[in-house]
Image: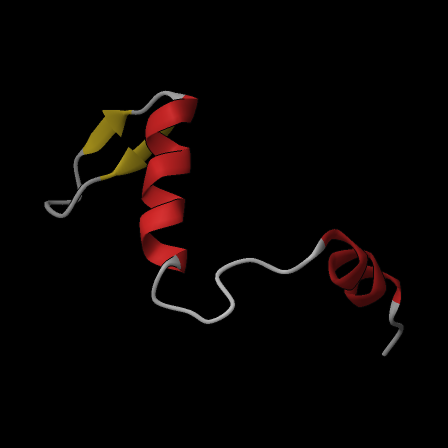
Length: 47
């Protein structure tokens, strides 16, 4: 996968690096991740 870095330059990232970056970003939230049943419930809510 590719994404822009801080200087707006495309860089290649493998899945492990992406997962690490997402984990670091989500660590600022409590709870860090939703439980699977909460994700399913949220996806099934119609607005």
